[in-house]
Image (cartoon, rainbow, N blue to C red):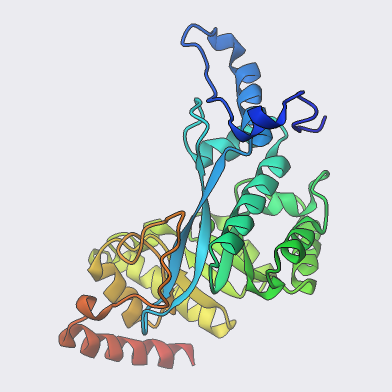
Amino acid sequence: MHSVSMQHYGINRHEYEHPPAFFVSPDAPRSDNGAWERLELEHIIVFKQIMPVFQPIVSLEDGIIHGHESLSRLVHGGRISNPEELFDKARIHGLTSEIEKLCREKALSLARDTKLEGMIFLNVCPALLHTEGHRPGFTAELLNHLGIEHSRVVFELTEKTLINDYDLFERGVAHYRSQGYRIAIDDLGDGYAGLKMLSQVVPDYVKLARFLVSNIDTSPTRQALADALVCFSKKIGAKVIAEGIERPEELQYFRSIGTEYGQGYLLARPTSVPVHTTSIDLSGYYDTADIKSGHLHCRLSRTACA
Ligand SMILES: [Ca+2]
């Protein structure tokens, strides 16, 4: 794979600082899609056309902001319209490592520039932990350069690509851990590999998949599954984050079973300029009856987990 850089494409400083929007003619033949996709990806990489946004991760006990997950938005104006598609196409074209490095560089630089406080959660594809071309120490160099402590960084591992070699995967995680980073299992409940990861890598955090969180108050089945996962996580010493909380009932339910943290539109939307507040007021979401039933449920959970 050749390197994708400004020099490689003969781009001058002005073009780099004022990047043109990426344009694909509607008349471009569909059979050329692969070539256009590659060009589009290279355009994003060369002009660094990713905008990071941060979404707070909040304590469900007292509303204190524990940290932020960094998410990536595309600003290049091309056909690739969302981050999921971006990573799918990058994998097809062998550019996953370049795209992930770009997202990481942009996120950490913005975190430093905006004086973001607390933990910084970064998404990483586990397959990349041992992918050729992903230079070990890249993040360490970047963090040292930006003056951000390693212990503030949490890598969220998800199964965007199948993990074929678990020994290599475990060595990759051990390597990250030895450098002081924290580990989270992302989207737990979305696929069987998440459970396998959980059994092999004792994570610092577990993030419950959105489908488990959505409308949990109306589904005894999802409640049973969430209760079991929260209970299991407590046993192995991992903190649980319920992602995608959009309704007060969801917030109330997860608080009632002793879930440490929540994330979602109800609490705060992702934004490129973090709000400099240390906590979010949750008092409007709990009434006395909820707290009573919450405590009861919490006691039962804790007894079951003891
Ligand atoms: Ca994530």
